[in-house]
Structures are given as structure tokens and as C-alpha cells.
Amino acid sequence: MQSPDTVRLSLCSRFGGCASKVGAPDLARVLAGVRFPTDPRLLVGLTTSDDAGVYQLTRDLAIVQTVDFFTPIVDDPFDFGRIAATNALSDVYAMGGTPITALNIAAFPIDTLDGEILGRILEGGVAVAVAAGVVILGGHTVKDEEPKYGMAVTGTIHPGKIVTNAGARTGDHLLLTKPIGAGILTTARRRDGIPESDLAPAIAEMTRLNAAARDTMLAHNAHAATDITGFGLLGHAAEMARASRVGVEIESASVPLFPRVLELIDLDFVPAGTEGNLVFHGEFTSYADHVTGAIRVALSDAMTSGGLLIAAEPHEIRKMYLELAPTHACAVIGRITEDGDGTISVL
Ligand code: CO
Ligand code: CO
Image (tube, rainbow, N blue to C red):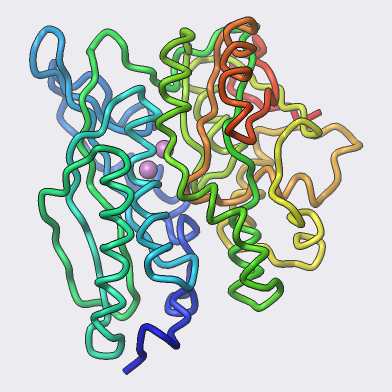
């Protein structure tokens, strides 16, 4: 039996965090074979690869719902709980919603790992829920060889104020509200390539709620938004581009990276999910010659609990940037172009 004091939780699973997600091409193939009935009250459903579903209750009230859970990406159970909960809430914020309730969803090898570890994971989730003003109503836990944790979250939203990934317009600028490369850092830590202290900046960002970013984007007329998770910056940008029937131009030098990310990519600390993304992203992305291999990998990194990617008119993005910059490592990273086929060009 592994105890809470000695366990390295991130070594308890084969795939870390959002890298444990089934890849976009595989998922698309599977979902294409399943018929989901439509309903007039379903305002945002499965067809647009949006962050969360939205269902209308009354003229001025809809619920926004999402579920996210995954394997540990860090060793400390409390931190893992905080990261998983922050990540689960993020999809509600990305739609412009306000999360109100959550259900825990967990899997745990109770015969080989001390139950106190699961307790610490759940405490981490509670800490985040309290900070977000979210009430945990209950949950469900199954026995499993690998620990997993996350939440099903319900939020409220006005039916006329939903921010989907389909509203980006030509000429919009793009704001990213957190650095990328957390998948690289957590992988390097799992393989003992960096000390625990080098992971601290990534843990700080992965446990940062996207609530302030949501407030800012609602105050300044965001046209479209999504959060950066397992499909990487380019993957989520491409979903926005396709849904909005536009193209995206990314200024690679402007994209905020966690410290050491490029160096660790050169040392080959690249998770399988990121490698898969890189191949998939190559199908719709063109890179300028000066964009190095390491930067291409970073832009495809499979993230957990990343920031919001927000599209809005340039002067609105400027206001959002000025509001968030004192507290967030945010940056204006590109713009929306008129290429209507969802292509991405990295400069
Ligand atoms: Co999302
Ligand atoms: Co999600």
C-alpha cells in the first residue's frame, strides 16, 4: 500500500492529464457514427466542438454543462485536485458562463493506494470550488488501476450572451490569457528531468481560475472564445477558425511560454499527446521558415487547465490586455484572417 507521504501520484498512470484524452481525429471518427437527437432548447451541442453544452430553460436563462476528468499530472494529491477542478470549471468560463454547482467524478486504486490520497485530491477540488463560489452536490467514485479525478460542472448563462468558438471575425485580434507548455514541464518532471521547484510556475497557472479572464471578455465584447487544453494552442485555435469560417495567424514570438519549455523540448521531454497533436496540426498549419521545431512542438503542447483564447476587435482586445496584464501572463498572439477554410499560419 502506497502512503500519502511517499507516493508520486504522477507516476501512477501511463498518460498524464489532458494527454490522457482520446485524440481529436479518433474522437471525430467515433462521434461521426453516433446519431445525437437535436432539440430546440439545445443552444450549443456536440456539432460545433465547443467547450460546453448550453440548454435553454427560460427566455433569459440557460444552463451550461461540461465534464472533465483525467489522470494525475503532478505528484501532490491536493495540487492534482486543484488543477483538475480548475480545468473542469474552465469550459464554463470559456462560454461566458457562471459555474454554480459541481459533481465530483473519481477513479481510485483503493487496494494499493492509501485512501487518504483520494481525500487530499477531493480537498483540492473543494478548495477551488469554494474560491469559484461553486457548491459541490455529490459525486461518484469507481475502483480503477489508475487514479482519475475531475468534475461535472453546471453553470448559468443568458441565452443571448453565449460566447462560442463560432463568432470570430476577420480583422479580430487574439488574446491568450496564460502561458503554454505545461504538458512539456509536467512530462519533464515525471521523467525526473527537472526539480519539483521548476514545475511551480505551471502549477500556479493551472490552478488559476479563468474567472477574471471571463469577466474581462464579457465586459469588452468578445466575439469568440475557447480554453486551451488537450488539443494544444493550434488545435483549439483551429476549432475556432473552422467554426467561425475564418483563418488564424499566430505570431509565434508573442506567445507566452513557461520558463525552460523550449530547452526541455530539445531534450525530448515531449508527451505522446503533444506529438500526436503536432502531426494532426500539420494538416492545416503552415509555418514560416524561421519557426523552429521546438516552437512548433510548444504550440501543439497538450495542455491542462490552460488560459482562454479570445477573439475580439483590436481595440477591445487592447482593453482586455490592459485589464488582465497586471495579474495575468497574457499576450496578444495573433489575428483572424479571411481564409475561410480554418487554416492556421504561424509567423
Ligand atoms: Co475547453
Ligand atoms: Co473540456
